[in-house]
Length: 322
Image 1: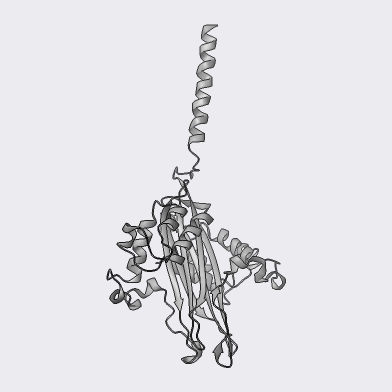
Image 2: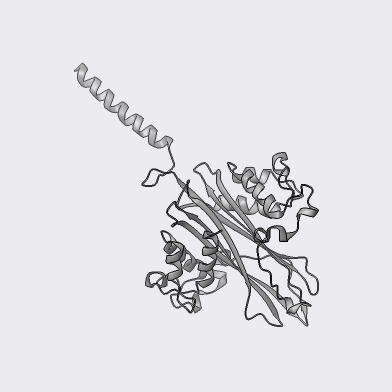
């Protein structure tokens, strides 16, 4: 009888330890044993500094890789800033590089108290963000929009109001999409003037991509978005109002594509289908899925995504090679 009781106790303890081990490790793991991570992004776009013939379009995009405790493993940030002038080639802006892509051409260094260009300061912010939570990122910024943390101020003296908000939102939006904590995080923004801009509307469109890459170069998670900065014009003067404008994903049903879609899907739904299709693909495989007309040539992708994908794919390739 004593032997039976001892055996039962040993069995109970075994189950107890197993249960405790499982409950104590809430992180899911991949087949190779690496810890799964969450991928997130956020875009904040605004139109500001409006005069009769000039204005500024700003789009800040942040991408993050987040662990099970909500702490940032990696962080990527960039910003597109477009300043059209109706008195100069009807608002056509030739240089549509992001602030990061412009590097020294952005010419912030001479005006910086720490003699650092924008790309250098944003790299310092990205490094500082690692290991932080969404709330910790926000708490490091003062009411005036500048860093209140001494360590952050040492490498980043630019206004980080929208930047910190974008990073914080990206962490809060992060989901398990297939990425692992060891994957490489990439981000890209691409913009172009809308071909159908006219005397009553000047429009710039932007694509955003946040992806993670495995050691084999294949996409493990993919997030895309797009925005349209519509700047109304009347009698050669801007009539658009200042403020934030939503991305296509944020607009959801208000983007109103469903009625014109041959598969009855809104843009955000078709973007989700593209994101799922992109997982496991290489850059070359995505490129091969785009036909000459800019639409998908792959039957599986076309089943859930009939929008033009050429700019989406080119921007993802830009992220891969960044």
